[in-house]
Image 1 (cartoon, rainbow, N blue to C red):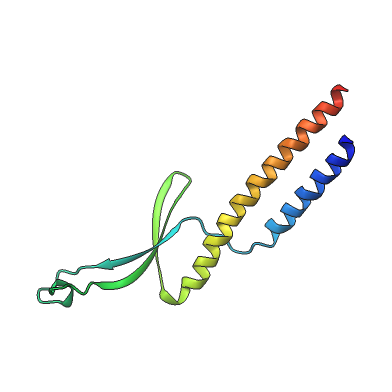
Image 2 (tube, rainbow, N blue to C red):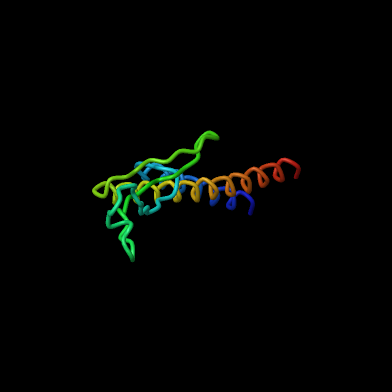
Length: 114
C-alpha cells in the first residue's frame, strides 16, 4: 500500500516540476498606480478639483533584504503583470512540492522502520 502511495507522490512531484519549467519569466513584487502633484504654480494638478498627473505604474519588491521599486511603461504593463502572476504561481508550486516531498520523506522513513 505504501509503495503505491510513494509512486503517486513521485508522479505529483514530477507534475509540479513540469509546471515550474513551463512558467516563463518571473518578477517578484506588486504593481501599483501612482498619481502625482507637481510644483508648477497654476498647473491643473493644483486646480479645484485637482487633476493629478498620471497614471504612472510602479513595481515594488524586496529581494535579498533590499527594497526597491521600478517604474513600468504603459506598453510593458501586460508583460509585467504576466511575470508577477508567474512569480506567484511559482511560489504556490514550490510550496506544493515541499508538501509532497515532506510527505514522501515521512512515508519512506516509516517504511524503513517496518
